[in-house]
Image (tube, rainbow, N blue to C red):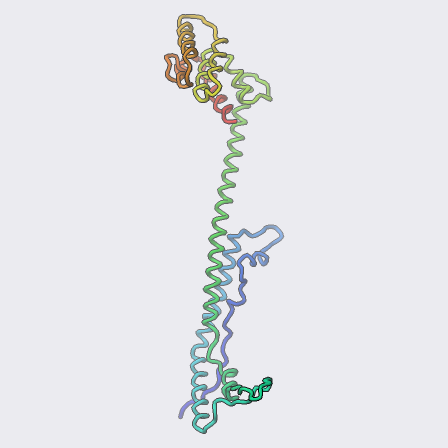
Length: 291
C-alpha cells in the first residue's frame, strides 16, 4: 500500500536578505561608549554576519530538499487526478474593466492549482538567496579591501609621524648638547651655532665656506672670499692655502673648484685638530642647510 502523501511546510530561507546592503551600516551596531570601530573591524563583522546568514539558509535548504520533493509529488498526483476526471486546469471570463464592445477574456488558473502553489510550495527561494549572498559578499569583500588599504595608509602615516617626532626630539637633544658644550645662547638656531663654531677654527671656517659654495654657487664664491678675509696667516702652509684659494676666486667658474683644488675643503677639514669641534660643525652645517 502506498504511503499517503502530506503537504510539507518548508523552513524559512532568505536570512541573507536581512543583512545590511552596505557593510558600513554595521558600524552603528558596534559603536560603544569608549571606542569607535575601525573600518577593518566593521568589514570583518559584516562578513561574519553574512556568513552566519548564509549558513542558516544552507541548513534550511538542506532540510527543505526532501520536503520539496514530496510537495512536487503531491502536485503531480493532484494534477493527474484532476486531468483524469476531466477537471479543467483553467477558466476564463470577460475583462470586466474593459469598455470595448467585445472585451478580451482573462484566463485564470483553476482554484486547485492556486491552492497547490500556496499550500504545497515547491520552491524555498534558495536560488534568489544564493544570488543575494554572492552579490553582498562581493560588495563586503570590496569594502574590506578598501578598509585594509585605508588602514595601511593610516598606519604608514602614524609611523612617519612617530619617526618625525623622534627625529625632532633627537635633533633638539643634539642642539641642546652643543649649546651647553660651547656655552651658546639657548635661543641659538643651527645657523647661529654654525656661525659661532666656524669662528673657533680658521681652517674649519674655510672648509665649510668651500663646501657650501660647492653645493650652491648661484651667488658666486662670496662665502670663500669672506672666510679668506677672516683668515690669519701664521706659516707657510697658511700662505699656500691663501694663494691656492685666491687663484680659485680669480678664475672662478663654478663651486666644484673648491672640491678639486689643491687645498680643497676635505684637506682643510683635515687640519682641524679638535675632532669634537669638527663633528659638531659638520652637523650644524648639515642641519642649517636642511631648513
